[in-house]
Image (tube, rainbow, N blue to C red; front, side, top):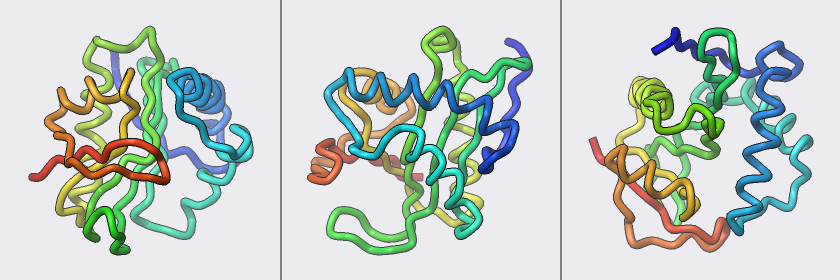
Length: 163
């Protein structure tokens, strides 16, 4: 396996320029799988990269294999209670590995990096709302289980993993 690095994505950074094509491919894949965010993909990317300064427990990391950008993860510790999940969970908001790097262990390595960061930031458990086509099989392989709770906003089931 080639060298793997994780670089924080910040607005107007080199990592942001490298991550943008991956973000656009991610958004196209989500749309193809029946989900969609009404915010324009480029605006959404810039908003996410810009929000990082306001929250020390929010992360947007670029996965690089050798020198090639191969994926990204946008994740945070949720400090607010909601009707759907209890506070203190580490949430994966966006997660993507380019198709040519899938099923080679890179997604798992990125997950382990992110989980370690979330637990260090104080998360007591992890959760996500994966798309049923490409996401659910991966998250199940990482030990997540369908919680039986449906997120009406994202129109997806919430998957959870306890420590």
